[in-house]
Amino acid sequence: MTYLFNQPSAFANELIEGFVAANADKVRQVPGGVVRSTRSKPGCVAVVIGGGSGHYPAFSGLVGQGMAHGAAMGNLFASPSAQQIYNVARAAENGGGVLLAFGNYAGDVLHFGQACERLKSEGILCELLAVTDDISSASLSEQEKRRGVAGDLAVFKIAAAAADAGYGLEEVSRLARHANHRTRSLGVAFSGCTLPGATQPLFEVAHGTMALGMGIHGEPGISECAIPPADALAELFVEHLLKECPQEIAEPRGQRVAAILNGLGSVKYEELFVVYRRVAQLLKEAGLEVVEPEVGEFVTSFNMAGASLTLVWLDEELETFWRAPANAPAFRKGSVILAEPLNEAEWILPEVDEVPAASAASQKSAGCVLAVVNAMAQVIYQHEEELGRIDAVAGDGDHGIGMARGVKGALEKAHEMQQRQAGAGTLLCRAADAWADKAGGTSGALWGVALTAIGTALGDNAVPNAQRVALGVQHAKEGIMHFGKAKPGDKTLVDVLVPFSETLSARVEAGDSLADAWSAAAKQATLSAEATAHLVPRMGRARPLAEKSRGTPDAGAVSLALIVNKILEPLRQQTASEKGPLQEVSE
Picture 1 (cartoon, rainbow, N blue to C red):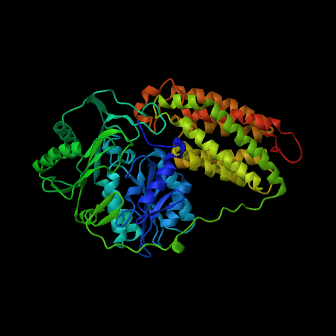
Picture 2 (cartoon, rainbow, N blue to C red):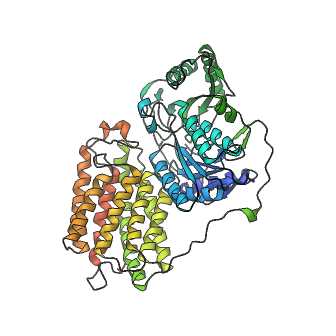
Picture 3 (cartoon, one colour):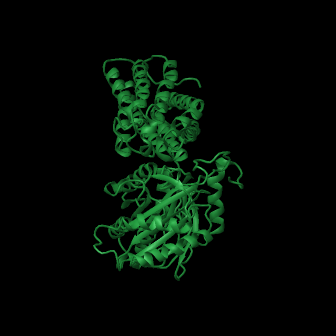
């Protein structure tokens, strides 16, 4: 269990505040995470890493000289939002572009991808790197689908050291990809973790057993067995990892490798040293020379009991940057010449949140948009527990919680925007940003994309009409399929969004009012959500337990169907007038 916390909802923010207070000589806080508090070379590439909180020392503890330039930090086990990542990247950027590096999780892929596109749109060079070192999460032929776990440390370290050495963005990206290609990890878990305020573990492992390949968020492993002696675990680790020697290495014997034995939260250093004793023997027997091994906690899973072993197959270039000095709060190597601290006047701060001018008609229509967001909040709060239950069948059970966090943030922002006389489009776009920011994870990213697309279509000048709303929903569908990569049949919310959008557009084109068209589309959404029960997931965390989910509808599809049906209420409350179908309504 977790012993020390105040309000569970404030835990992630308070841990960042305390972390910065304890390490102010190395990092400073910015909205969304932390960046170096020391001066970097002008024109150097900024390596910005990130992911959910709960994995310390990843990600904030790996920011400092010779390590990352910034870290975006989401809520516990939830991806940082695109806005958070963008804020951190802007604060860390030194004029040489940005490499965004992260573990290969759906929410991270979405949010980091969106942040990358935004940075590029502003003329900032940016590249993406998803770490894929976990050999248990996909086959070698599908290496791009593998998760990023403790191999993060090696890839981040090598890329950041190259950036500090003066490599340009293209070369830093190349080297990061090369390091990722040569990095392999395998982990085991003996028990789950319990987040602040929770009475039960987030995930469980049967007493006395070990889950081989369990992910750092509780994603299922590849097998379970009785907990072995330390030597037997070391042998299991080494045997599996040596089978994954990169294909370009014809003769493994004589190769040099970096080894990282990582504790996942509750396994103590003394236990790790017992395991590493045998790991070192086995690697020597295999003819491998270990270069500056690391034993400790580097990528954890809150207080999960478990461990992982990572091997990085080095060449001369990779070894140079693996051995390069570093000085971060949680990772130090060699001796660095301490950089000068930045003056507060030099800090890059977020821009003032200005509200664009809007027509009086659009400001009035913003009242209806606010009522829509309020209706969304009501239905999500009502079904939060049920959505979590559905998600837990083959996922991690956090869909309801994430949706509730997201819609709460969206509703608060929508109220603020109305008070500041925002137009309909700006109100919804800012609500979308808040949803993605507060929810994190995959659903937060997708709903941020969807609401932004609709808000952009509404705009701040003309009064929204049925055609504009249908076009916004169509753009939302296209945006989600672009960023999320899901297709109909993958058992995601796309299985509802596609028929909903198509029905809405067809009925609007046939001349129906927005309320009537929306009603027909909402009925189709309900049927489509129910139909996902017959599908098996083909992507995301539920994919390894595909058959287990058969018979249960997809949580994201269900939540979307609930929302579009609930939105009918404020739409039907409006009165038909020459000003268009979206009117101000009472809350």
